[in-house]
Image 1 (tube, rainbow over the protein chains, first blue to last red):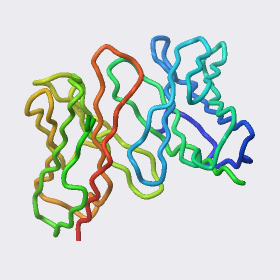
Image 2 (image 1 turned 90 degrees about the vertical axis):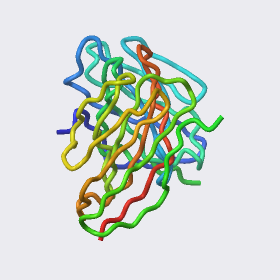
Image 3 (image 1 turned 180 degrees about the horizontal axis):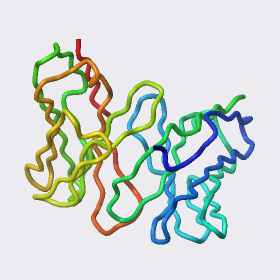
Length: 109
Length: 113
């Protein structure tokens, strides 16, 4: 069974912020939240991860709720190249992550 | 710097044939993983190896065997291929103890007729 719940699809206008939600109510206290994306049929690409605090890197920002049961990935200025399937998952340092079906983000001109 | 390299990239098999998918990483990572992805689906973990000499089952291990040949290489074998194993297979690696990134290969597309 999928460990996370994400909307199957979302649209975003080019240049606007894309906010992708994820519910992970079964997350354990020592597990991190991870986000990956997959462009076309390429291998998935790591975006960002976090434990409790919000995180930001050159690709995106991650907002984790205080109870850690949900998170939001923010692409601040979406471009056409950000069109992809975005996966939210969680796990420990062992890395055996389980991926659901993700959210297909379409960035439109 | 190649990262994670998978071979072959494409393969067509007949039901009952056997084959091995090869994966090698040049990042000195300890942990390696095999996933499969069916059309319109997410990735499902088949097997993983937390370190050289160890392997563990993932979500969907039936019909597969793995070998962690050395630190660099992690192979996936189909002993008797079935049409249900038609899929795209991804190999990934990660440094043990580190959180975060799985580095994925570009995938191996397998069709079983």
